[in-house]
Structures are given as C-alpha cells and as structure tokens.
Image (tube, rainbow, N blue to C red; front, side, top):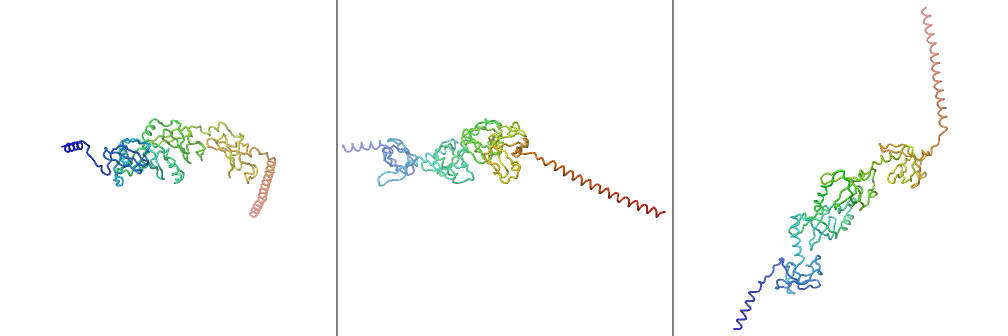
Length: 412
C-alpha cells in the first residue's frame, strides 16, 4: 500500500515537472551562468542540463570579467562532449547570429551605426565582430580619412590605413548577406544627410573659416563638421604656388571663399579674398625707385630678391653688372643685401624690371666726340662723291656739244 502511494507521488511530481527538451545542434537557447572558470563557463539550461562554453567559443568580444554568476546569456548548441558528459555551447556564434539580425535591420532602415576597425589591408579597413570580418573599402571612406598619397604608394597607403585602426567610425550598412560573408560599411553614406544640410545654408561668394585637414602638391583640403572640400593650388595665391604647405599647415584655420556651388561640388578660393598684388605694388612703387633687399636665390637667368616677405622679383643676368658676367656668384651671393633700381614697371601686363648696374653707370665722355668724327668723315665722303658726280657731268657735257657742232658743221 505504501509502495503504491509513493509511486503515485512520484508520478504526480513527474507530471508536474517541465518537459525535458533536448536542444538541437545549431539552435540558439537561453541559459544562466552557474560557474565561471579560468577559460570556460558553465551554463544551466532550464535546470535540466549543465553545458559548457569553451574558451575559443567566447571570442575576443567577450570579457570574462564582465560576466557574473546567474547572468542570463544566449548561446548556440554545437556538439556533445563525451569526455565530460556535457554539451558544448558557443557564445560567439550566438552573438554572430544576433549581429547579423541587427545588420539586416540597419540595412533596411538606413540607420547610422558606430564600428571600430580591428585591422587594415591595402583595400580598406576590417571590422571584426565575434569572428566575422566586415569591410569598409577605401572608396567608402570620407575625404577626411581617405589615404591621399602621392604616386599611390601602396606602403604609404597601408601605413595611413593602419593609423585608423581602433578609431570609431560612423557608417551605414550598404551590403549584407544571410551568411554574413559579405558585409560592407560606408562612411561616405553616413554623412550624406549631413552634407546635404550643410549645402542648404552655403551660398556662392560666402566667406567661411574652415580647418586645413590635409595638404598635397596641388590641393589644400579644408573641413568643417566632418565634411571636406578642396582648394586647388591655382586658387591658393595670385602668384605661382609650387608648395601649398608654405601657405598653410594641417590643423590651421583658414578663410575661404565659395566661388562655385554645383550640386554637391563646391569650388573654393583663398586668393580671391586678397587684393590683386599688382595693384598693391602699383600704389607702392614706380619706375626709378631704389629698393634694398636680400638675394634669396640665384639661377642661370639671374638673381631673385624677396620683397614684402612674399613676392620674388628677378634681376636679370644682363642687369647685374656693366661688365660681362661669366659667373654670377662672383658678383653677388645668396642672402647678400643689395640696392636695386626699378627700370620698368607695367602692372597691367604684370611686368617689372630691376637692375643693379643701373645704379653704377658712369657717363661715357668719349662716346659723343667719336660720333662727331664719324659724322664728319661720312659728310666728307658724301661731299667727295657729290663732287665726283659733278665732274662726270661736266666732262660728259662738252663731248655732247662737240658732237652737235660736228653734226652742224657736216650739215653746212
């Protein structure tokens, strides 16, 4: 009788207990942490199973120090561990599935998210999330992060991209696949809306102050609010510019003028904020003025002086000395201070002539008498020629008369 009652009680308890469900491989389930070991964690599932998450299935995005006993986590069922009579779970793969699900949501909504690249190659930046490597191609970087390298040197490009690793990037998901093998992020797409709003308040001929973000041989890059545009070397200064870095430094604020606004393209100028330098020079200098300055450099055509700290003027080789100049360095040296005279000046044609020898010319007293003697000689020679012509005429005339007389006599 007692036996029957105990069986009945056991049956009742069995009926009241939750149904034992044996998870299938690949299934994502929820459990609570019951123990955190040095490299593994033990997980309780429905108070029916104790399962193991091994070290390699934690992955580097999980910090064991951030986990506590009885925390609820999601895990994926991998396989049985016969040795320990445990099922093997993966926290990493459960997170991968969750991440892929979120990426689809971000892709469909166009939401901007933050990612952090973990490594780089010459094609772009790699984002590692729970073992899945996703990509930000170089072509999808904003101008502020784009690797601008002279001659497209691959080593320099890679060095530039490596410097961006572990920085936060605002991006949009522009490509996603179910298996998660081809996920592409775009930083450019993330700023499209911001760029559009910026263009709404910018107007042609506006003057704005932006920050220099990069310098190349033919460009200054200026940026504001994460947006970036270019100033071509021809619009940096009214004089020839062979080195833009002489006019600005990275991080420096510069004023620029918007000279063109076409859809998303903005044309900028620095030189148009300044007065035409030839007009400035015309107000300050005139022909005959003597200027004191240092020789800044020497070339095969002459020597250059720097005036007002920014303009280079040429003293032509022919204007260095009154004598023959075989070696210009025998007459002047770099950084030597000299006096030069303005011998011609045409601001409209952007021409100016300078001379050192004009300050040292001495009047040549022998020049004029020589010319007079030559003139007398020429006059004498002319007179002799004229006289000889008259003699010829005189000599020829009598002969004609004689012939006439003879003719007349013959007629008689």
